[in-house]
Length: 83
Image 1: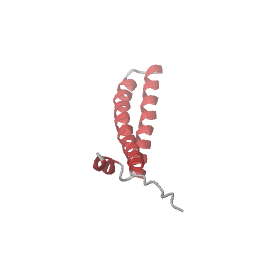
Image 2 (image 1 turned 135 degrees about the vertical axis):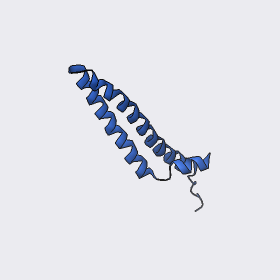
Image 3 (image 1 turned 90 degrees about the vertical axis):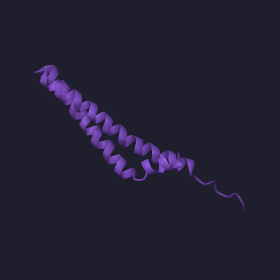
């Protein structure tokens, strides 16, 4: 399990970039769905798959961020209290 966490969380900056791109696509998908509500339904048909893709991309980025933090928590060394 430690190896999997190390592999998934090896580059937290890249994971954050992936997460933010997915978040941007999510916002774009919401805009398309809103356009479809007020104008033509074709915009909603474009927005829904874009929203699904954005959720998948954001989830992948968030898994990388979470894995990095969890790996650091599991491998934290306790300081010596000897004085």
